[in-house]
Amino acid sequence: MDKKIHGHVVFDLPTPYYPSDALSLDELAHWVAFSRFPGIGPIRFKLLLDFFENDVAAAWNAHGKHLAEAGLDQKTIDKLIAHRSKITPQHELEVLEKKHIQVITWKDAAYPPLLRKIEYAPPVLYVYGTFTEDDRRFSVGIVGTRKMSTYGRQVTERLTTDLAQGKMTIVSGLALGVDTVAHTSALDAANFYSLYRNERNLSRTVAGARLGINAQILPLEIPFMQYTKMTLY
Image: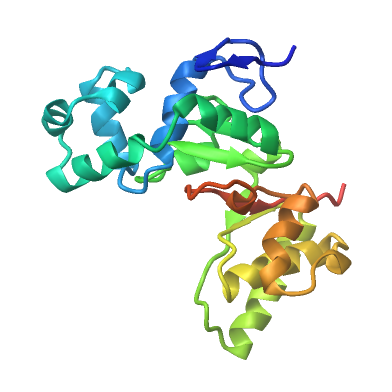
């Protein structure tokens, strides 16, 4: 059954963009809304959750005084208040559905366990494509300089190809340089070379091939996780 949104009322029906039941859709809408604001990262978001006892809607609608009591500085408070006047949290769910984007949050069992262990793990991830249990368990991050040497390119290509052929999920950030070579080498290993022509088109290729996730397909400036999933088996 599809989810339904009427006005600003969100009904908790099963949704393709959030199959988990860890959060209600109203809660999810506010998690997504906070992720839209670059001034609230993992640390500040955790402060808000703790102060407002996980009532993220209350945090979103809080007066500046209460946000200060939660631990936010005045500059961040002013920017957040200005930012939230431009966003309707429930509308963000409509965008997710329209763009076929799935959401994974800290609260969800599907959150990648290795990513969860890092100090500044993002509260919300946006997924386009198929994200499997093997992706959560068998993945490796390959990132580096934007201005690589010839030797650096050769090492990145060899390392990525060997890992991809070993059925590892390659995780990177789509930046120029090492990141791009990591993605393209993984695509090459899976015989997807013809799908991309240059670095500028790579992000669309990774998403279009249903091999990863990509924030560029959302009209949002949000943190995202980018991975290249190999389909060699």
